[in-house]
Length: 151
Image (cartoon, rainbow, N blue to C red; front, side):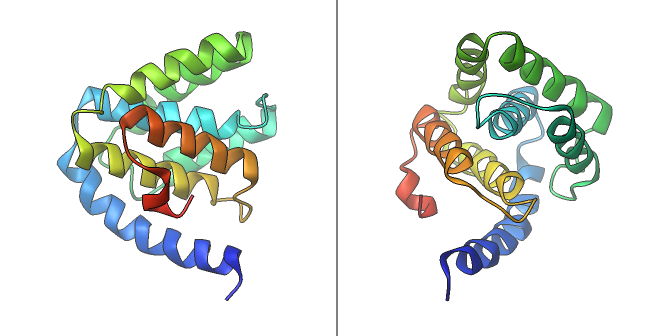
């Protein structure tokens, strides 16, 4: 089985698990970290173009996993992190990583956020090397080995 097929199969499994997990973590830190990882994935190549922003925002609004949060609040948080990354990528990345690191003492919540990142990274059918690197960095921010997610 090709690596991408394995990733797609694993992402489908993670999506079901993530929805169950996300329901346990309905709080501000989890929502912020989820949107921080979404913005990091969108900006993984160093920029966020209008089409990428639109697709990511659409995914956030319609994704079953994140449906426990009001879509308008999630989009506001995503736009905040995306705007910071667009204005100054390095500074924005620091802020997004800080939001993620708030889950370091909550490993179950951290794993659920990483799963959200992987799902979003693969949503367009192409989980590329830059997106994988963004997820690896998110794993490091929350104190979880990227190897746990085959990254």
